[in-house]
Image (cartoon, rainbow, N blue to C red; front, side, top):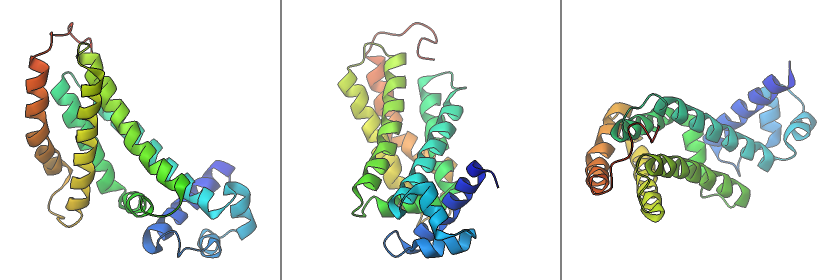
Length: 202
């Protein structure tokens, strides 16, 4: 099996076991057994159990970034950008329940590097939102754009946790809930700023 494919297989199995049992209760022996490789091979690829955990979180981070970027690429207005970005996030959560469970669990685990990776995902989404806000409204205060982005990321993360207990609330409905609360305030603030050139934000 090619190295890249083998690494992806290891990450998939490790993600599943971490999500089921938690990082601390998981052993490299169990991961190796499920993958069908030797424990030394796991260490050869990832260095340690912590390295394997970081690999799982990093992959989730990359997948979320790519999905969000693809979703907003076709947006033609700030409102559409926000709506499509939110929908992409909630769809990611819905499609990657194991990844999401892993991120939530390990955010509270005493593994500093894992905590940094999880925070990196939040920062990644915040930076993306803030950058787009600034691009379609050049006169917006950078601090204000950053604040808006933090509010969006915080709200969506908490609502994603809430939807786990509300299976009937799918990605589309979750998106509408967030838009109903956040977009009116953002829209009102943008109206007070000078209008940007057509499509300048794209």
